[in-house]
Structures are given as C-alpha cells and as structure tokens.
Amino acid sequence: MKKLQFLVVLAGLLLLAACGQTAADEPPTSIADIAGNVLATTTPAPPVEVDVFEHSFPVVRIETGGLGGQIERNTWTDAEITVTSDVAGYNFEDAAGRIRGRGNSTWWLFLDSKLPYRIRFDVAQPMLGSEHAARDWNFIASQSDKSLMRHYSAYHFSRLMGTMYYSPFARFVHLYLDDNYMGVYMLTDQIEQGPGRVELDHSENPAETGFLIELNMRVAEDEDAVENEDFIEVNGLLHEFRFPSGNLMTPAHIDYITDFLTHIDTMIMTEDENIFNYIDLASFVDFYIIRELYKCQDVGRFSVFMQLRGVGDDRRLEMGPVWDFDLSAGNAYYQGQPGHSLDGITHPYGYRPEGVWTAEENRWYRYLMRQPIFFDAVLERWAEVRENQFPALIDHINHTAQTYQQDFERNFMVWPILGQYVWPNPPEVVQIATFMGQVDYLTNFLTTRATWLEENFWR
Image (tube, rainbow, N blue to C red; front, side, top):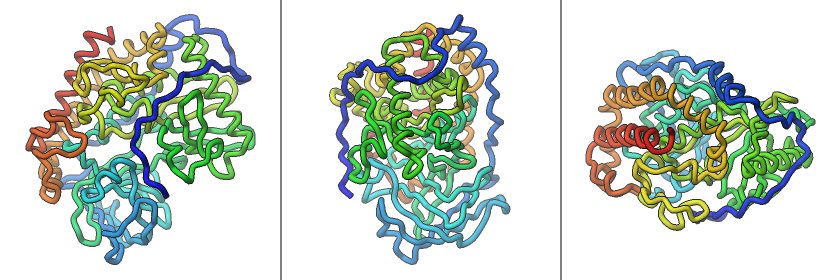
C-alpha cells in the first residue's frame, strides 16, 4: 500500500451536463413550500443525556498479547476487548475481535504519538449505551485538538438539530492497550450502512437502491481503489462509494449514480430552482450551518457524506452524517492560505472566527447560497437554532468539560502537549497551557463566529 500523499487536489472546472433522471422539474411555488414546511415538520432528535456516567469515563481495555506497539494502519491484529463502566449493563469482558490503525493525516503525522484505532468484533456488539450493535467501532485520538471536544461537540450539535437521518454515536473513554494507558479517546461509529447507522436498502434496480457516498479527493491515492468501481469523478470532484460496494455495485448502479450526481451538480452550478425537487432541503441546510459555524478546513474536499434515499417522487439526495472536525474552530494555522483553499479563493481571515468559509470552499454551497430559496431557508433555520440548539450546544460543551475535567486532564499526563505545538495548531492554541483554556477557546470561537455570521452574512 503506498503512502497517502497529503497534497491539496484542486478540483477542475465544473462542466455542464444533464441526465435522464425522472422527476418533476417544476420549480417550487414559494419559500414556504420548500423551507417553512420542511423545516417546521422535522421531528427533533430525542434529548441526549449529559451525565451518562456518574463518576468517570468508562475504561476500554484491548489486549493483543503484547503486539499493541506493532499495530499497523492497514493490517488487523487479533485482540480481546473489555469494557468497564459505572453502568453494569454496558460492561463485558474478553470479547473476541481485531484492531488496526485508522485515519489519514491523523495516522501518518502522529506515528510517534497518540494514534487512532479501529476495532472489529467477531460478533456485533453494542457499546456503552448505543441502541445498535455493530462489529466496527472507531477510537478517535484527537491529538491535535487539545480541547478533545471538536468532533464530539459537532456530533452532539447534529443530534440536537435533528434533521439529518443519522448522527454518529459518541462516548469518551479511557483506553488501555496491553495494560498501557493510551489516553482519552472518543469512541464512535464507523460510517457505514447497517442497523443503527446509515440504514439503506439495496435493489437490483438502481432507482430503488439507497446510496452512501463520500466526497473524498484522496481516494485516488489509494492504490487499491479503482475508478468507476470504487469511486467516480463528477466534474472534477471524486466521490467514493460507501454503499453499495463490491458485488452489490453493478455497472448499472454506477451509471445511475454518476448520472444522478452529474445532474445535481449541473442544476446547482446553473442555479436552477428545480434542484429543490432533487435534494432534501432540511438536511442540506443543517449540514451547511454546522459546517459553516465550525469553519471546517476540509469541507470542500474530504469527509463530506451524502445519501440518496427514497423512490419515485420522494427520491432525494440528503446530506450527512457530519464527520471529521479536528481541523475546525480555529485549529489549523494554514487555513485559507495560498494552496490550501479551493479554486484559489482568498480568505483574509484565515483560521480566525470571522469570514465566510463553507459557502466559498464547498462548491455546491457556494452556488446554493446564491439562491434566495436556500439562503432564506438558512436564515429561517438559524433564527430557531440561535435561540435553542446553539445555546444548548455551548452549555453541553461547558458542562461536559467541567463534569469530567479530571478525566480529560489524565490525557495530558501521558501526552504532555499543552503549551506545545502540535500540527497544525495556530499560535493562539499553542499558547494555551490548560485543558479548560482549550475548551474556552473552542466555545469563544463558536460564539464569536455566530455573531460575525449574523452581522455580516446571515442577514
């Protein structure tokens, strides 16, 4: 397996194209038809318990027979997994499985540091109160995110917003590997099709098949990935197939999804109002708000998931789940610099909380935000979120940090990185030498950015 190359792939100019996708191509009659009704009828996600564990984070122990220091990114190592927590019903011992590394820059740039892992049980297993059992689970290291909260808080925000079909499950844990304490990790889902995750149907008829797709401009660097089998290029953007895949992804399925995404891309780029007959507005709006608020560095290139759902007139492209927030909220010094922005766009504010980002760096949102229907839907939704979900998000971040402060700080006993540079921390992050100071930086960034967006863009 060749090493991944961390070069920014500049997308080509989008070409106009069309396909034979059948759907009503009549524009909506009013904003209320598309925005108000869709957003008003969305069922909110159930409330999320803050204090799931009374005393401290659960402990996950992974035993490999002494091979923990030799784990590779792409090779599985046999393991036994044990979970201990304050909730007896969540605990189990010596479950058989395997472990390997995971991630791209979070693996290759931290080989001598805190590494991320993925485990696979022999038999599907629920984890720490998850409503679903699954074989694959991820342990996110968040080594460059010294608040340890960017991924977690964004997933929580997505659940609070409640419009996307699915938001990743997440719990903080203390991880031990062969009795060696590895630090605080976030246990979370693998983004995949399956019960409790992205539940999609498959059919021999592509028009009745659900698709899970990732915008991933790195996929072509994987020597095992084959174009038009594992991924496709749509007007310069690389889309990786997450489901269907393998034998389920027939040439007919590939042709169908290529035509569909090309049609979507063309309508967005030409600012065609018929686009709202093809996309799920509520999920597109909420996905945009979360990504814009967090100012995610890679929103135009990587970790942008979407799902094609429904049949007939109800078939829509939905955004989500949200994923990958370590390089967000002012945590990437190079953000907006030449060579690190899409299509050479200038971003004078860089990583700071000011400045439009997602509506420029993600090409679809750049053009959607020019459409009055979409822009007004964002304003309408943000007015609700500003009063409800956003304050709840800030409260949840602060409450979680304060409640489990000692747990979080254990991480920095084994990884004493506070007050030191870790790629790609900007100077303001490097200077903060306490965990709670890092949390304050995160919440101050989000509140400052929300105010700037309201006063300068979302108005």
